[in-house]
Image (cartoon, rainbow, N blue to C red; front, side):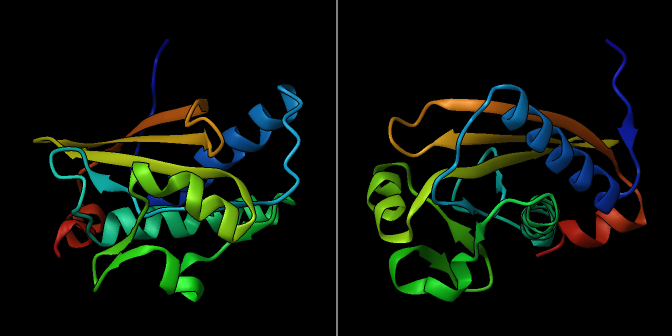
Length: 154
């Protein structure tokens, strides 16, 4: 399968959200609560994010909401989410079930990024908060250009 290298962050984020919408519909996944979205983190350091990881999660959330899903903004509920100042919202695996109950969420969108010489590789997933199983995932590649470079800086 030939994979397109995205050059625009927003286009790539919306493609991910549209894929998730299609997958949830095809798999007849019923979401009774909301969906949490965590900042995408550096695959080499799961406690580190950057503006790119944060904006991708924001854009996926926005597009999923446009597509009719209820997204829960974790920044408004900082008391129960691990938030590292100016770094993003991180969902620690041992806390996901507890957080999902307090936030009334069935699923969480999580992801990682890896920076390579000419590309940034993005891996996003929707995870069931009851058993931490991956419902679906969307992986893609962003070309490194002035846009991605500026967002990779902390």
